[in-house]
Length: 129
Image (cartoon, rainbow, N blue to C red; front, side, top):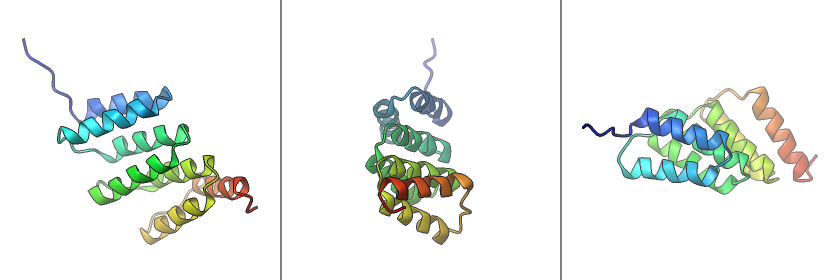
């Protein structure tokens, strides 16, 4: 009887399911186990874990994961930054949201309408609008 081993795709699907179900702690836990088992996270697994944190308002965890994604060189894109900016927006952390936006520009990433919407809401929630 053969034993199925987890891979980046199956672990990514589990993280994504947790993200969609609002289970941010489980998503991050699965992500951490993935890294411990020496499975290489993809941009999609990072995005799903960051989005899970964003939906739960866990902006600090989202920023930590974004930093790890940038260090890993998996190809951080606009969607990754948008999820982290949205996490800051939900917590009214407008200064962090603006720093992330500036990081996007330094990385030559193209902001989207989602980026600008989250930035505006972050400034509004932070009393800057």
